[in-house]
Image (cartoon, rainbow, N blue to C red; front, side, top):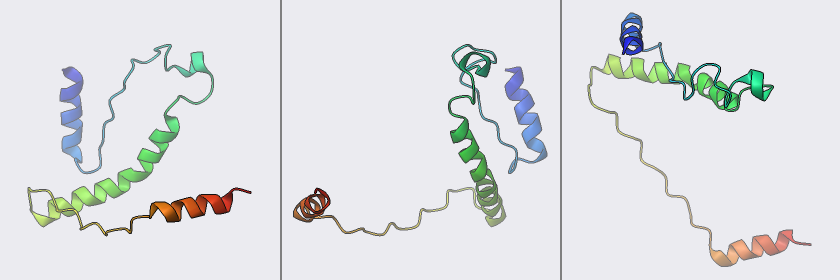
Length: 98
């Protein structure tokens, strides 16, 4: 589509720092429009959270590009967390109930 070609052209400028999020609904759609709903659009706070992550994503993309690797970096090993015994869980619950 025309939008996809524009996005591709813009991302050529700075691919590690230009991000695009597709809209689920067209502008003015009554299911999402603030004029109809009043207040902040549902999902706005999720969007705000995502925007705080963007600098970290950019740093990761930069690091991957600098490494010269086209492959995905491996995930660090996960630490095993101890399993909570059922009896211990019951004790904790009983201790909280007056």
